[in-house]
Length: 331
Image (tube, rainbow, N blue to C red; front, top):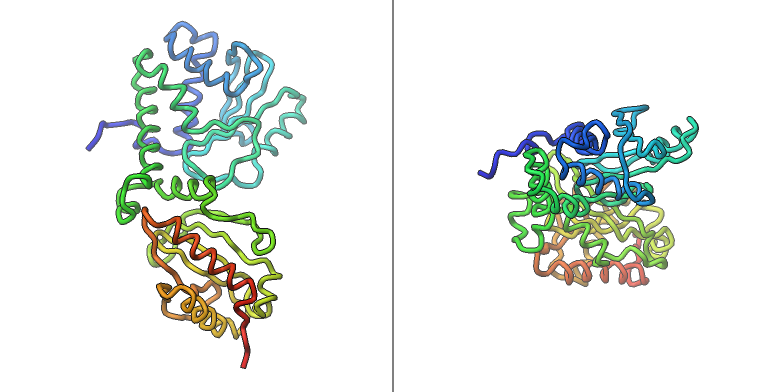
């Protein structure tokens, strides 16, 4: 068991809001002399938010002002919206809505900051993004000098998250779900950013991808879905009348071909597609073919050593299907 860390228990966004407000408050004139290094740390963080200013001071801090997580006034000039996410994802274009609300109040110098400590599929459309890496870089210079247990606990908390996120680089896939909370977030981010999964083949796929934790009665899984056929490809395969979607999905340690049925013939499509896929990649396995809307055609397993080649093989398989090699034939 490791050190007793406050932030192992204070994991909510409200707890993180409190930490951000606490730290930035050391850049307020009332607290500039309490701890020199915490003030310098706070001003370094402010510099990320308002890089135009050579030196910044906080003149006001509000929480939950018109549903904004944190609103700070800087140098009596800027209104800075901080949208704070711990482990949740973006939604509903929140930051732009908040920004427009403040501009409508006459706050012309309004900035938006997206504060995120764990990887997510997409970034919010904010003026400034502050990541876990940014925070670690800033805090590293002050954590020893400040001699403050709150800052140290938060810094060490971020280090543990960083280790967890990057565990896919040096641990076996069998322990990813057992020993880590964020490893798939790091792995999926790696797949997207390093172009290991392909999302830009305009002649085949629609380019959409996403990832998240998927809950289900069997215990759930971490899933990434991509390589969804365009309607033209479905039509070329004579599938458009029978299914709505055909795409790839990673489910923990499986790479899966998924389909979304829209007809009574969907089960026949599923069997036909499975036989085609099996003839191209013999290692493909199938689950029990039960009737449903979202169905697994077939899957292969991958691990931390062979995921690149396995992903490529399944993408190549999908290209072959769309090339005209597969056409669904009705009796």
